[in-house]
Image 1: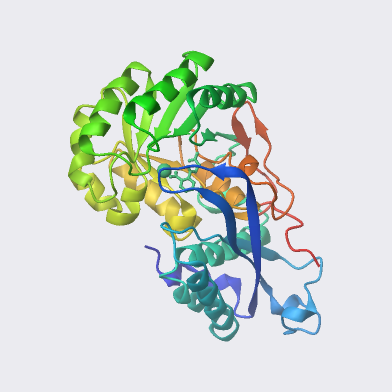
Image 2: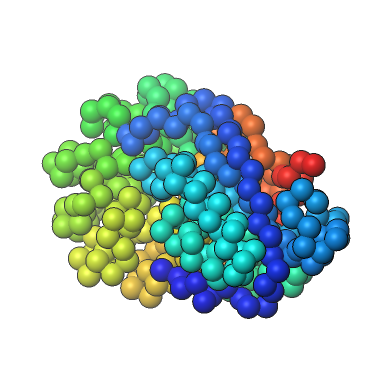
Length: 378
Ligand SMILES: O=C(O)CCC(=O)c1ccccc1C(=O)O
Ligand SMILES: [Mg+2]
């Protein structure tokens, strides 16, 4: 959705891009109706000006001097949401060659069709530009005000009603006032029971959302909505398969006060079709699945113009992509609570997390660029 000419020529034409693979395991398997998520395997990239390296033009082995500006990016493909791990790696290799020979616009052109790879390259270039301008990434993405915090939801996988209630209560004790429960792995009555347990555990001051990841038929979704409306669920995300635009549009007429959100549906149909058919109140933006925080920022502006509400979530990513998503959310005016509190779902990370959560909100890093450090061990 973004043309390659968007790469600022001011980046210079003597850039190098390096790639490192990583594997991060989850602390516990996240059970979703789209399948379990057990580990996140991907690629960290960094870009820097070769002229600033020892010997000028020295390649990947030479290292980068401490005072040279560096941009970091992350490609963490996820089956069903992005290109495969192998296709991502091949695309990043092409970008590495292209950036050296033909510059940043050529590198972006090489990853145009591979969303996770494009996410990494565009994030690294944006981080480099923002760092050189000594501005935090969210301002580089167009936010003119200082934004200190963005609200986040806690993410809770499928579990029995008692465990769901316990996890929800625990999230609220940690400060969250919005929890998103994964549903769609058991029958409707079972999920309603889980949401009721969560509601009873935390009272009515806490926002509860549910995400069915395409699990239901229209009739099941209608039945669920009636109960969820009574339980004051705020958002039902992707109840029907991604293809079912008319179905989602029809559900909006029977959803009471529950907003209908599309996630997988956005990737399948794009903004225009969703708006034309009135298929959603809310659109979920995953920068990793959309091809980058720059693309996601444009999609956010576009859906807002149609009166829909954009919100941001990670795909359970490492610290580089996750913090990129925090900056994206900070760049979107009046964004509701976002799916950014996913660090604790991982048992390990790429480096120190610069994002602190306070009272259910992510404190937005105010350092230059993304604000991540120490992710590239020597
Ligand atoms: O939104 C959140 O709370 C976290 C992100 C999340 O749920 C998710 C994570 C990986 C893959 C898909 C999804 C999803 O929103 O469907
Ligand atoms: Mg979702």
